[in-house]
Length: 457
Ligand SMILES: [Zn+2]
Image (cartoon, rainbow, N blue to C red; front, side, top):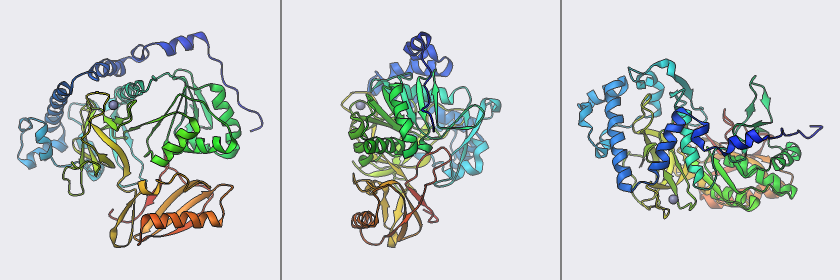
C-alpha cells in the first residue's frame, strides 16, 4: 500500500452516543435482556437455581408439546410433557446430536412459530458433521450481545468502549473484501485477521495505534499474530484489556499475548448454536457459565456425568432462551474441564475450569491413544520461528505438521520442534514437517490447529 490509510474523525455526537447506557442504544430484545441480567447477576445462588429450574421446565414442556422432534421423542420414552418436573428429570432425556440436526432440522421448529421470523444458519464443516439450525431475526443476536456486554462489564468495559477488533475477514456493504474498516456506532476499528502479514503490519499497526483503543478483541490466533508482529518490530500497542473468543485460548498463547500487550486477556466460550455461554470474570478463576442463558452438562464418552475435579468432558447444552428453536441436551462436540469450585467474586453462576478444544482436536497415536491440542500448545517458544502451524491427520500413528515458516525458520528449528513434540506426545505418533505458504482458515476466518480426517472419531 503506497499511502497509510486515514482514520475518520469523531465528532461530539459520536462521543455522546458512546457514553449512553447500553439499553438506550439498543431497544427490543437487547434492552429487555439487559435489564433482567444486570439484576439477576446479583441474585443469591438459590434464587438463580430456582429461576433456572422454572425456565427449564417451561422450555422442555414447551418443546415436547410444540416441536415434532421432541413430541416423537417423548412418545418413544412413554413420557407426557407434564412428566418433566424438575432439573433432576433432565438426564432422563436422550441427547440431541449433530446428526439429529442434520437429519431433522425442520422438526425442531415449534408448530406455532412464524418461519418469517427465523433465519437459517450453519456451522462450517471443518470439524465433524456440518449442521444447520435456525435463529430468530430480531432476538438471537440482540440477546447474545446483551450477555456479552454484561460479561465485559466485569472487566471494566462496555459495548462501545473504543476497540480494535481482529476476528475474521472483512467485507463492505457490496461484499467486496476489505482490509480494515471503522464502525462509528460500535466505536471499533476492525482489522482483517486474514491479512495479518508482515507487509500489512507496516501500516496496520500504526493505524491501530492512531485509533487509540482502550481494548483489543479477536480470535486468540489473531491476537497472538498481532503480538508476534509487534514484538518482531519492537513496537507496542497500549490497551487496558484484551478479549478473545471463538477459538480455544491456549496457555502459551495467553502468556505471550499478555507479555507483549502488558494487559490481561479475558476469554469467553460460546458457539453458533447458542445453547451455552461462559466467560471469565475479573478474577479469572474459571469460566462462569451464564445460568440464565443455558444449562451446561459435562459428560464422558458413554454419556455419564463428569464430576471429578479437573476431568475433561464433552459440553452438552440446553437453551433456556431460544424457544423458537429449542435445543435440549445438545452435544456440542466441545470439550471442557470440570470444576465444582465457585469463584471468589460471589456471582451466582457455576463454573467450568476452562474449555479444552473440540473433540476432533485430538491426534490419534498407534493403538488409539488420544493426544489433546492443549499439550501441543503448552510450550511458550515451541513455534517461535513459525508464523502459523496446523496438524493434518488421516491415519492413526502419523500426522503432518504444516508450517508457514518465519524469517528465522531453518532445518535446525524444524528438528527442534519435532524433537520437543515427539518427547512430549510419547511413542506411537510419527510427525513430519511440511512447509507451506499459507494455511486455510474456516469459512468465517477461524484458525484450526488440527484437521482431523480419521473416520469415526
Ligand atoms: Zn467470578
